[in-house]
Image (cartoon, rainbow, N blue to C red):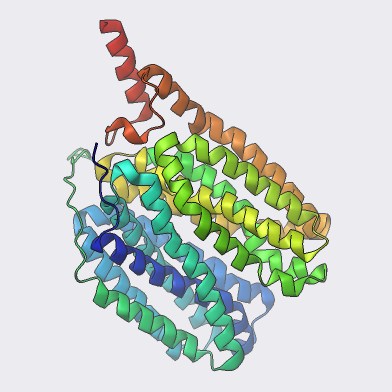
Length: 426
């Protein structure tokens, strides 16, 4: 059997587009609290609000894009999203008050939500279903690179040049993105027009893909736990006198993802998602335990490596699953639903965890998050993991996982029911 081609012009273009989307996001979010404090004398809580309000805007942008991309067209939506993303970025040069900054951050979050949902939806159409796990893993590396390069450039520029240089870097990268998108070709997927013509009023199915919700909830809770690292690793390593080592945490984290993700993607396709997800959850749990007990620089870096292999691959696997269990014509909504739930977990996490730190301390917080991740393993089993084994048993052919089913847009329960009917006929 011939394996569908993954690496082609369109896959490379959409991966680069996604890199620039997240490069701008990570660069600005890494410096925004400092910018708000230095430029407008903002308090720490108000400076932190600039991140939270950005997430709110991102959710609104994803809701709109997920429900409209099929009607507008994925490539046209990509152009519109990047044009607005670039325009809002240019407005940073004109901000002259804290109120305007917060309004701009919310609008910028909305355009980020539009752009990131558009790139993810197009990648879902370009990646062959038979190589869903592998392709999503490679595609998600663009986010990993952005998470390492964006903050590095942002903090370096902030230390050695004017803040506006950061805005120039973001504007240039988004301008380049608009240009390189022209040769991109997106496969056309026919709509089933499943929504009744006489439907009136608000229809949640027009904004959310229900079949992507279970894996989205699991990922949201996992992102909630990861936000304990993303938001507080600097303060924690400073408290335990390992601040210099702590600055290398995400370098080791990103390197671990870069090395492991290609292998993990192939295992996802060939052996099934459970073969990847359960070990990844366990590694993330161990990473949090090690981080909570860290006494030396080596243990902090080891936690970074294990978090990269664990959480980093959990995220890409969950993104692939959200698309795979959803109907073919609703991939865009599935992607939007997945990232909305991800944003909720990542956005609420720092706020709620901030209340735990005075009581538990940083070490106690990380250990408690390890228990939460372990509990999520059980939730995953009931919401998804146990269903994949049932499908395999009903098929009776020993094939690994869902990727080889060739059933597009079908629920897992429908596959099971069809298998049972076939057995009755036999």
